[in-house]
Image (cartoon, rainbow, N blue to C red; front, side, top):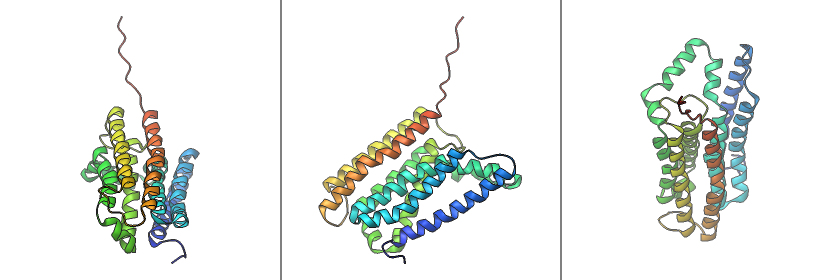
Length: 250
């Protein structure tokens, strides 16, 4: 194991490495077909991948619960927004052969994907998972078992991507609700994060071992910097809003 970098971070780095390689192959295929991929989309995806890779060293450098929270903010909130705004599904649909693109569309329209991309369910998996992590013995298990740590970090990354995709992603989502409805879901997510951060700061209803000052420092990071990802999602949602004009009355 690389000194100073925990096993969960190394597992995420490997996962992101595979994703970036697949991204590069798809982007190359799209260019060969004369359909250049927008540079901002590429930069967004690579930024998200970079944030995941940065999470391990950043968390190890800070240490304690504050270091853990930095990893959570980068992997579970900021990186998913950047990855999703890179529109990887749209790139795949452009680059894949027709038969495989049709198969991908069928997967996107399948019942499991339709269920997972319902914003309220995505919210439950994302924010609800954090409540389970900090209000049950799961966090203790994560700190003592590398295998549990890997599973938790992978869940945090995928749940964050799923929530960002369902609420504000540019990629196609079956039966996507209206912009006002998605803003309501996002508002609930903001409130749930804020309440959990306050409980962590006060040490109420949570199961986070360690010194109180470390727990409070991590809670402050979650409270103040978690808003960055949610603001980015809100802006992405609003940018896609096309209000229906009122019919003119002659």
